[in-house]
Amino acid sequence: VGLVASGGALVQPGGSLRLSCAASGFTFSRYEMNWVRQAPGKGLECVSYMSTSGTTIYYADSVKGRFTMSRDNAENSLYLQMDSLRVEDTAIYYCVRDLGEAATLGVFDFWGQGTVVTVSS
Amino acid sequence: EMVMTQSPATLSVSPGDRATLTCRASQSVSRYLAWYQRRPGQAPSLLIYSTSTRATGIPARFSGSGSGTEYTLTISSLQSEDFAIYYCQQYYNWPWTFGQGTKVEMK
Image (tube, rainbow over all chains, first blue to last red; front, side, top):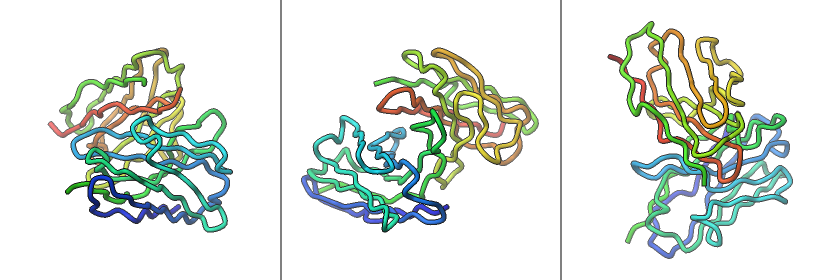
């Protein structure tokens, strides 16, 4: 199983970034996916969740209206469009796979290595 | 948002010792509770879900228990590779939330 996140960068407050996650080694279309972040010195925060088909999406209140999650099952790829970025969005962003068993929505069985987003002027 | 509180923040133990980590939820999570291990420089990895089910490949020295708002991760005999940070996480309702972590360090 491979999850390689990319797209992290240094961006000014108010700017935009698009994170990508390339999945390999498993049937991507059969798994719910997530973005989880960890800010410096802070805990782990679930940013967004997407169902296999993309029809159900959850967002953390802290990013609702600013971030948009999407997926391309044909390309085995996950995305996070991040707009109106704030200093507090500075974090490592992890692309994370859901376990995919019954009654385990929200259990994360594989994490990519993460991509660093820094929001600073 | 459900708050998960882990204790202790740091646990100093010797190899071969038993370690007991606690996680308390601000309201019942109905056993929708997972534990993750995080070694330095690595992303977290799944240890246990549904309170007590070990993930694939996890050795039997790791066990979980609990109900309602109180949960426990026990490592029966610590090995050198077990010194790490451990996080609990509830997935009972969104947003799924993590505890702040317990660092298990060598005494």
